Length: 159
Image (cartoon, rainbow, N blue to C red; front, side, top):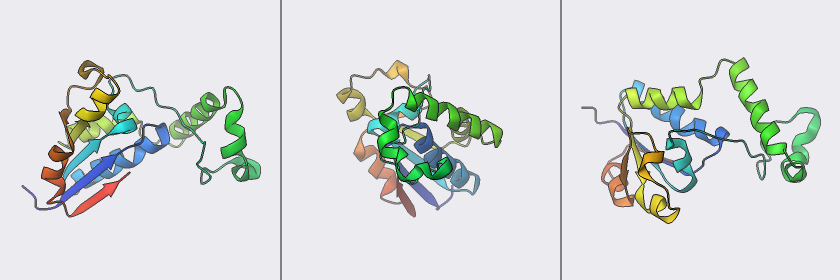
């Protein structure tokens, strides 16, 4: 067993925010880190059996946009009906065209690499979610469960 440990807290549930925890966790596992990801609040969307992740440019002024749209679109453009769907479709096309792994593939890679995936039981209870909505390979626990691991981690990230 390695003494290198990475602890990640994943709080976001959009397509663009799904990549960092899974890329970092799978990479760390490949480098020999013992890795645990704690999915809480909206981050729990990333553990659902049926992934239906969308992109929301709202409040994300760093999102690259064509023709200087990044100056105004993240605030005004998101008020246009159907824009979230269009942005999600554009992002999925770009991901595919660039040969980037899907969230499903990255999540599967984490499972295969024995990354510990913890779903926040308090959040599941708070939002009336059901255990059967989530992939089988996760464990449920609270903050204390995460801190048992994170307390000894060499690196801890909040995403």
